Every structure is written in C-alpha cells, then in structure tokens.
Length: 217
Image 1 (cartoon, rainbow, N blue to C red):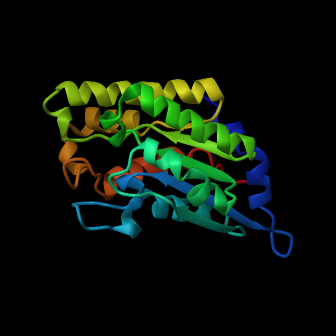
Image 2: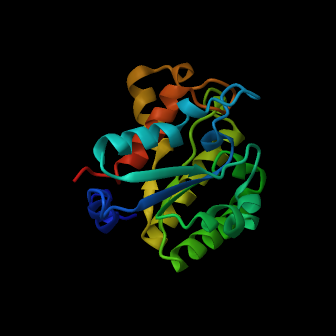
C-alpha cells in the first residue's frame, strides 16, 4: 500500500493552481450499490453517499480546483461485471484518480474470480497512468452472526489489502474504519441503513478514508 502523504503529490500540486492555469480533475468511483448511493433499497440517496461527501471534502481543501466526481457504480454488481464494462464506463472518463469498491458483492463470485477481476481493472488503470485507490468493504449485518458470510467478507477485505500492497496503489480501508468506530461506539446500527448498505455516518467513514490521499496544499 502506498503512503497517503505521497501517492497523489503531483496531482495535488496541480489542484492547488489557480485560474487560468488550472485544469479539470476527474475522480471516478467504480463499484456496486454502496458508491451508487443505495441506502434502504430501492432508495438512492446520492448526496449522502461517499462519492458526493468526498467531493465536498476535497473542494474544501482545494478551493481553486475544478473537480468532477463521476460515479460509474451499479447496484447488485460484482467485480466480474465491473471488469467487463471497465474500459467503456470508467476509463472512458480519463480519470486522474479511480476508486474500486466491490468487496460486499464479491462474496457471490468468490476470492479467485474476484481477484482476477480486480487485477484486470488495476492493470488497465495503471497502464493509462491512472492513480488507483482500492476500497475494502463496508460492513453488513452478518457482523452480528459471525457466520460464514462474515468470514468471507473478512477474507475479501484482506485480499483487497494484499492487492494494494502488490500493486503499490492506494487503500481506503473502509472495513477497518468500521471496526475502529464499532469498538468505540459499540453500535453498528448507527452505520447501517439496510442489511448491507451504510447510513450517511457509514459513508462518511469511507469518504474520510479516501480523503486521506487528498492532503491540502
């Protein structure tokens, strides 16, 4: 995993440049229902989801930058599906930074298939000089049961961390952010709006994890 203080340094320098010498910066959030903004399905709460919250955080830090946060997430999708449309839907926007978030749904395809899909997307993005930030999954209510589904989620989180290390890309460890806050607050219901979708408080944890890479200049 790349240290957050250095990973986006050249881009952050550009984001601090004032008009008329500044440029458009595109951030693409690729993934499943969580970045798409689903709360209690089928309700989509776009402006309380982490891509929008992240956008606001970054703009507070870089008031001179022209920033687009583009969501290419589809509810119910796995990384295998996301890989198939990756070039067409995500890279077509020529992102400067790309986040990938599929951990919750990837339990349905398993570790092996999801690893192939994540690696394919990472490779494609890096080949186009895109900075990549991988997101470990947010939690779901299997936490209460500590069942096989929960164990699978833990394994997917660990696999995503390993991929961030392997490719030397960014990591937004949403899973660990949930863990830290549950240890303090002892109440997962504060962070879950549905079986497996975060509340705004849960989305704020993810946005803060990604925003660690956008250090104000």
